[in-house]
Length: 161
Length: 291
Image (tube, each protein chain N blue to C red):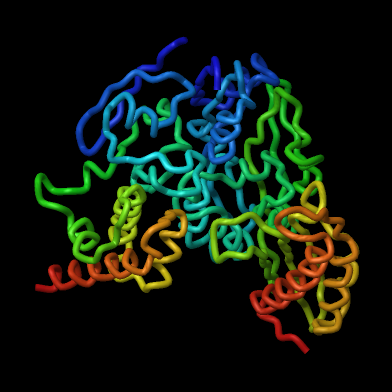
């Protein structure tokens, strides 16, 4: 088996790894780089648990080959907090009880951050549509949507003061 | 997924030589939203995955009022609806690329891949057929063009030879007073496979349909162009009654199966309803009013 040498940027840091041609980015993140924050749910693109940002777009890491990360910038849930301070979304998910078992949470955090980066004032419908590719079997979604809304209004307050 | 190779050509020539060398074993990787699932199911053993995203011709997204749209086969959905000019010119195409999967899938999945995968339920294909899109297909031996309605030949099978690659799709410029629309029915709001879908385009003039095209998803072994629906529209006044006749033609042309997503009878009913609603919306987009 010929391993592929891949150079990319992960959470702002240069990263080099070896992977097999068949390995997904999800497998590489979890099994090779030990970045286990990104979760495996369905492994076929339906559930969004493995959502990462790749060159500024959210993608399911299970449907990306590790080899495709060559030259790419990847952001995982491990790159969301600023040092030891949680990102506002992470705090809002905690205070808003937007998680129970927590398996879907990293995907929701990465996807919600990408939404707020491009749309600081999304409507409830826009949030639900954007997050349609993320499944949660615990919360019933309402608390997730409200936590994203709370983060958005907090960010707007911060930017207006 | 056993012994798989990964290739990343950066020119079309290099890409075509890889497909010539590996033939049946070569599998094009654009967004991977179908391919990686198929690989895990064991459909690509000892295959050569050719990542076509770095070939400039497959990444092109260009619109000109005289040339129309050139859509590289590997261009992901989000780039299409993210382009304001393309969105204005082809709302019927935007209907499909903004409903395929969800945000994450749209970050990867391409219209070219949706077509090559040749699923009867492919959402992008009826819209492409309605818009008279043409495929540009290449191999080391040269290039050829094929209308999209002739591209899918059976479930999961397309008209390309093993050494051929879909380079791009070409959509003619939208005629004056034209409009298009794609509607599908799924039992959820998002993230599902069409029980049935209808893609239509119309061109209006002097209160009549100058042109009309109707194509259906999920109701035949391949996406289905309904010639008789176009015949029912062309030259007729822009009226509900005429639209109803085209919708009836769509229902009559559908030859669906019964499966877990719906019965054949239900799907035929959906074809009539979706065709009617899509035509009404296309007329509005064309700037017309319905009598």
